[in-house]
Every structure is written in structure tokens, then in C-alpha cells.
Length: 450
Image (cartoon, rainbow, N blue to C red; front, side, top):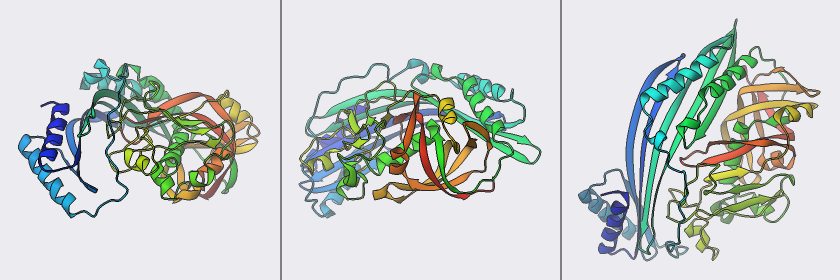
């Protein structure tokens, strides 16, 4: 059976077992990865995995079960387990219904044959080009990273008539470069993603990561405090995830832990800030429907600095008498899937020239939420942080720990970049497309030793 047939069979078995409603989603991922470290390829692996997720409903009692065994006998056993679990559940008074079927328009260009057929030789050539370009920079010691290609297939069926299926390809290339000069080490990073493996530019990625590594050698120490900051798209993408996942979802809003509770319809950010989620935009890793088989809709989340929208799955939409926006995740609740931030009219160089005393930051890591309602997060800079004085980059600084609100970051945006970059967004085929931006203040609370 193909994926849609497996989903139909699972739903049919649920109904035969006495379910009042049922839903089955089948998700298949065939991925290959070529990994390199110390400037040479050391691993080439492939993985094929399929997961069946069943939602079994008895009135207002709900169970969810999963399995990666898709034989008919196993599916029948899984359905029986789902029934037993549902019978033991307390009724959920907020459950209304699974979603009704809606037309789903196909999205051209999601599946690229060259990506699906990419072999280890082609990925090795990509890795080779990246490594060779990086080593053209003096002081580069080692190049690491990976090149991956994936084919993602999904099928969702429910007892109310939803039948959705689609497939997409994704190619990713990322690199970490280490430079050295005496006892000093420098670290650089670069990444790119596309539906078409032919769009990856390994020399550009290698050059970007290597240049960044060399430019971070011999960092100086500066004191924590508030600085003007120019954030490159890698850092902005991470900020968007925490802002969206903990703020722009209906679940966080209804639970009272979202900053949108205080700002819906009110100005929260600079007027130049516009944010939306659009799973159909081909500039992202487009995909036509969510985990419930509901078509993805464009949702304006912030318009001219004012939060205006939320992302819904069917469960939380029904609680407000609304319809799902097509953002159901693998578990209960909506998930930001294809985030966008509007661009401005400045280059990064122009942002630097307009900075009196601040920092240029490549990306963040070890980010954790401190206060979701205030959108406060903490984390560290990584792979390139530089001091800016009087419009010029004065040199690299040791990595900094920050603790600040994403609301404050975006409220203090002064300039937004005119070019946007598409990056992976946690769960394939999700994506985020954001520009660089300059904020007039951001709070740093500590300094590392590297």
C-alpha cells in the first residue's frame, strides 16, 4: 500500500473498532547525509523511516498512538491499543471535532527530481568544493559540516473526508570552520537550504564560514551591558522561532503565557516590523497542508509593529469558534511552520556605518526561555561576534551571554536589511526567511572565555 492507502486503512479500522471519529497521518522521510570533519569526508549515511500516527476518538475521549511498522496486522494491533487507551481517558470538554475537508491547491516546484536522485558522489563533490574554497583562506585549520538531501512524503486521512497527500525535497549544506593563529582559535559558520540541490553554492558557503573564522581570531574582552546590535539572519531566525512558538500560537495565547495577550491589536514592535507565516510561498520550503490535512493559510502575525494574528490547529480554533489556519503540529497545538519577516532597504554594511557603539552578531546558541509572557530568552553568541565603534568594525570580541526580551529587540529595530535568507526552521519541511536587522539596544549579561 502507498501512504494514502495506509492512512485510509487505518481510519477504516478505527471506525470498525467503534471510533466516533478518526484520523491517520503517514509520514515518510528518505534522507542521505555526507558529513565531513578535519577537512575530509568521514561519513556517508542514509535513512528511510515511515511513521503512522493515529488519533482515535470516542465521543470526547481521545488517544494518539504512533508506530513505524506499517503492515496490516500491525496497524490493526495499533488501532486496538488506541481504542483501549481512549476508553481510559477522561472526557475533554473542549474537544468539538476533527476538521472538515477543504480544497488543497498543489504547489508547483516542491519536488525536485535532481535532489531526490542526488547520490554520494554528487554530495562528495559539493563537500570537496566547500572544503577547498575554505582552505584558500590563510589560517584555516579545519573544515567541518554536512550536506544532506531528503524526500519527504505525507498523507493525512480522517473520517470526515479529508484526504491529503504531497511530497517535497530538501537539500541542506552547512559548515563550521576553525581558524588558528598561535594560541588563538577562530570559529565561523554558514548554512544554506533549498528544494533543489543544484541551488546550493558550496564555494559561497565555504568562503562565508572561512572568512568569519579568520575574522574572529584574537578576540578582545568587553564588558557586559546594553549595546546597539546588528543581527545577521542566522540570529534573527532563532529569535523568530522563540517569538512565534511561545507567542503567536493560539495555545500559548489561550493559556495566558503569550506576550500577544498584552499586545494583540496594540503596538509592540517598531513600525517597520512585519511578520507572517505562509506555507505556500515558494521562497520558503513550501508545503500545502498541516498534520491534520488542513490547507496552510497565510497568517499576518504582526503588521507595522502591531501583533494581529495567531496560528491555529482545529482543537484551539474550535475553542474560539474559529477555523484552523493550517498550522497543526505533530502534537496538540499549532506550530509555526513557514515564517517570514519583511525586508527593509539597508545593507549590513550600512547598518554598521550607522552604529556608534555596538556589536555585530552572527548567530545564537543554547537559547532558553526565561519568561514566555514577556518573551524573555537567554543564550550565547556564537561563530562570530565583533565590536563596532563609530561605524567601523574594530575587531572580534569574546562570545557574550544575553538575557533580554524579543519584544524589546523588535521594538528597538532601527534598520532592516533589504535581502532575506531562507533557513531551516526546526522541523522539515519548515523554514524561516528573514533579513538582517539593527536594534538600538540589546542586553548582554556575561562574557565567555573564548
